[in-house]
Image (cartoon, rainbow, N blue to C red):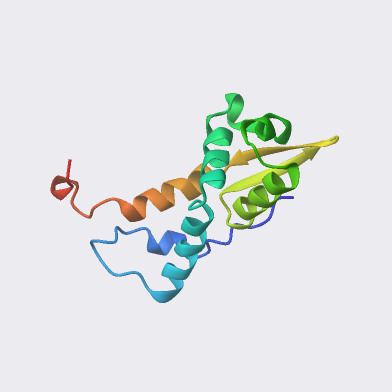
Length: 121
């Protein structure tokens, strides 16, 4: 289930927004990832996976946390996978998901002010 992260240009775009404008390709790639986490269910799934003991969570551990169907959870997990935020590995009948911390670090690096001293507290 693992595939290459779609954020090819992320290393080049990790300067904070306040330092220099994003290029169009950088903005497109970042928007895909931010869009993936803009849904409350996907944001909760990402949080549940990231905070799960051992850094990975079985889909069986995720479904009971929501009042939506299994196929809906599968759809949201697929969106997170395709954005490069998570990866999944099938073990028997279950899929175990883990977060790509480097993608989260790249996202947060873009939002950090160029000069931390000027950040609003």
